[in-house]
Image 1 (tube, rainbow, N blue to C red):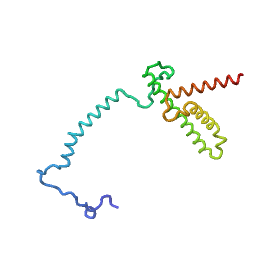
Image 2 (image 1 turned 45 degrees about the vertical axis):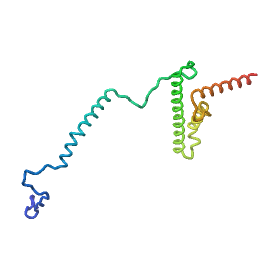
Image 3 (image 1 turned 90 degrees about the vertical axis):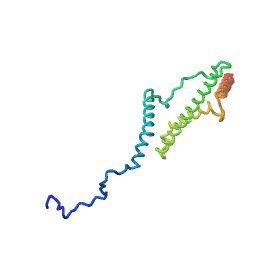
Image 4 (image 1 turned 180 degrees about the horizontal axis):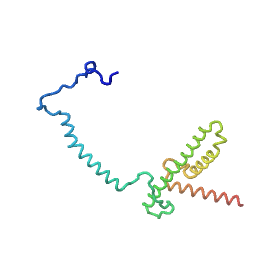
Length: 175
């Protein structure tokens, strides 16, 4: 078999684009519009965006994992100190959200264990079930019966009443 193909048998296909002989053709308007757009709109916007990104890269702030300092409880606020009341209320709301998430995570772990273990779930998921019972009991003791409009002050009053009831129960048991 010969190495070079026969050019007369295998002719090259004709080119599809016609060759223009005139050099006085107008520039393509699409190319002109793209160039104008690039220099007038895109380049300044890109420059400003990159400048802002450089400024933000200098002082990184991570919006997640925000750590709030612990503020005094409502019981520690002085009378008429509304800023302290507000901070204590915000702290209480954050604590309530954290406790809700803890209950939800433990519930998801129990569900995953039940799914994984199948028929042996009562035997193999007893630890998770006990943990869920403890967490929900603690959550119910602290936040139960507060309703949707519960706040730090009503939660404090609930704790106070529970402590008084426990003291009365201890007095009755000792007599």
